[in-house]
Image (tube, rainbow, N blue to C red):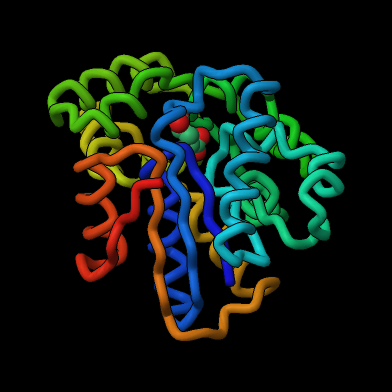
Length: 252
Ligand code: DGL
């Protein structure tokens, strides 16, 4: 069984992409809303929360893990595999598959993500490894607005303010480096249109879901078990949108 982990609703964008490719996979999902947002926490805090989150999924029967949270990618370190007693190949995180999908492309990438992701340099370093130049733009409070059910107007203003300085900078791709952001993709589309920015929007969920299908066991009965550490109407709404309303959400 595949376990998917995020701070909250964001990983549902990855679950949705996985469901499109592997409807029969058995999936257990954990959204750690009690400790959300993750994007403003330190690398050390995120490491500890990642171990706890993955352990919960293992306790529920997961044997292969998708870390659907960009903010923790840099905190997934080698000792963690010994601590959790799982093989290295049994975790897929967001950055590796996303950067790999750019191999051989000519691109200049602007990454929008949380503070933890941008300040860790994890994407910028990954892109440097394949000869692609990439810069980061922090959107520190968008996750709170999304989880808090904020208004479209507030989100548009926040995204527009962040992207306006990059308007004429010649980027070819805008990478949604936080799994929450594809849940409000239309906000980004609206802002790009308003700013007349011609740039390709990239949702990493697709590269990650491709990696999952290539490497993990996606056979099963199509069961989806959703768990959160704090009850949330926003999570209920996004989960109904992403995987259908038939799925129950358990609060741990
Ligand atoms: N969705 C997560 C990410 O991809 C975490 C967002 C947060 O909790 O700040 O970074």
